[in-house]
Image 1 (cartoon, rainbow, N blue to C red):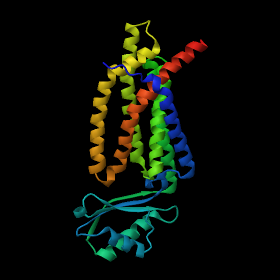
Image 2 (image 1 turned 120 degrees about the horizontal axis):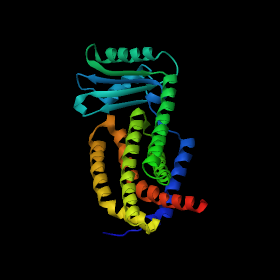
Image 3 (image 1 turned 180 degrees about the vertical axis):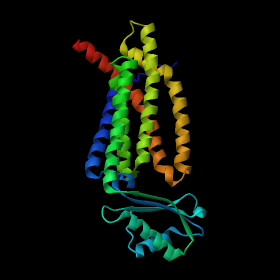
Image 4 (image 1 turned 90 degrees about the vertical axis):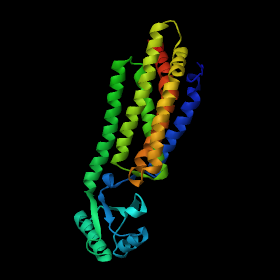
Length: 295
């Protein structure tokens, strides 16, 4: 078994993570998240044509009729002839806008030449409420995990795990701000999944830490944490590579609809391992020393 000093690298990892978090905060106030229709309000229409239609022809047809599109993309293979149209607006009758799109497509491509597979309409107020609810869901999930860890283990374990979870969520948000990928409800679902995955990895190591503490009551905190990390590293690598492999396959081959979801998942899996090893566990050592010093 290798004996790598993971805890000793906390300062370097901490500075690196702090730089990423500061960068995310700066980008949030300068660029901001690219909220999807779910959070901004608007119309999202998925349409399937019976005959071959190019993305350019569809864009031209809608632009000529002054349909204000925010995004138009092809879904799946070209021979499927499926498209996703997103319209963002804070004014006007959203139902009328949706009807206008149907009329334009009928006029351009003919009656019965297409089928509306999905027609989602979200008002601006409802979008703003969904945005607040989404971030509340993330907050309550992290709070519940903090309470669980404090009860399941000792109080000293909770701060490190929560810091790691917040670290992961913030940096993923930074990746979405940087790339200006759409932040929607499915990304919130991805963040909740990442929180669960990351804390599971952390709990496995915390269990090993507790076992070593009970078996070696005189061993120092640094040595206990490093030993726990080294003993669980093979499990961490195997599990993470398995999840990462599936996530990468879905990212590159799953199509446009789930691309952003697995973009978040891929980053989250990598960050989950990094934050557990270099943030959560080392912080537990310093938290323990802090409480002992004050006691």
